[in-house]
Length: 381
Image (cartoon, rainbow, N blue to C red; front, side, top):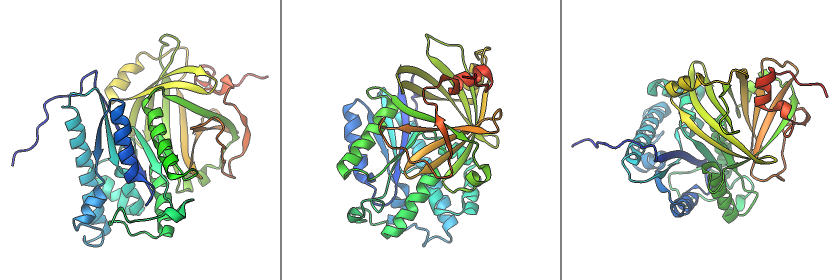
């Protein structure tokens, strides 16, 4: 049998975005995928759905309980998952379409929830990737919380015969899935605070916001906190550590332009971000991935008046909200926590161990650009 060949490569006018829709059992993912297909097709996207790999394998008789060990099964599932995504990406590049949205019905990091640390390390070794490379290979991740959390009366497994979790097990799986994706720069958690229809509307709204349909507004609040207990943070299963180097480039038309190296232990991904302030806490933000060579080339255009920002970011999920705690080498008594919100009036549920000093959302002294200019020194008021 002949192998599939793909001749055409992505053109400058073609934009391919790969996202993950994940979540606990009975979270609404199946229906959500249909909504995504309909909503974004109307907006001019070619929508490609990568089917859930675990369901395919288990329905076909390949399961953790039929393979020799769970590790044997996880290696099979991971390889098939990544091969499917590779083929969808290659096929997308041959299509006569400007905007292509690849939607993964669960992503590779979902598998992390079903392995212990030793098994996961062996799987990473098998595929020759780091955790950061695997996690950040997706542009955005949208997690639909299981109905067993906050909507137990609607919990059901009837739409997926490959699943067998009780409501209690569903809650545990949901927590593990969120923890597996913690550390991704664009993780959004959609809970059950509204009815199901409104929940899916929120999913579509979050994806629209990410894609910039119609405008990619980001509502962000920032707080100065006491220096966190680092050993405690690093011991939490729902927290991930990421090393970030942020470099500001020479300004173009008043916009803020920066590049970032993100990862740890010698494994990194690279991004370029352009920000334009609209009003208050709302900003238009456009981000794209870079290759290592592109990143290194852009470094030559660094703004000489601004220092590189180096920081350790702790990505923490708490009560379905996503916090990013930035620890800087020039501060020993304080740090900054940021949270992105869908609504400016949304209540923030801070973890108990997080000691808030004050909000600094509108304080320019605590913006990364200002810290890059003054090396972390804050002017006296």
